[in-house]
Image 1: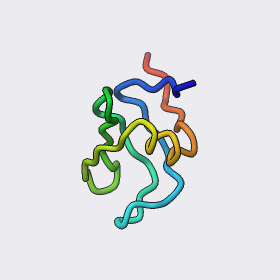
Image 2: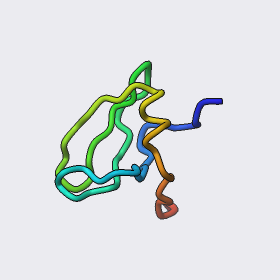
Image 3: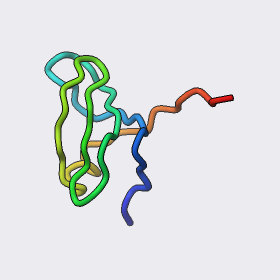
Image 4: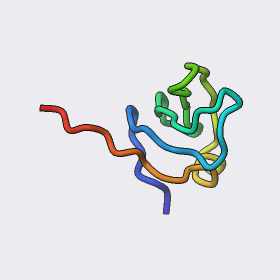
Length: 65
């Protein structure tokens, strides 16, 4: 069963990006998942399968008023 992911979600991946950041923001949904590193703003595309293998957890975000 695929993960329920939406644009704007923040996820933590298993391995760090070379810049040292673990947290990524989802910027694109489709056959590929577009991610943006929250540390250095680098963007990558991962297949859904690769994304689901690499994701560790969803980072809870503050509730908006």
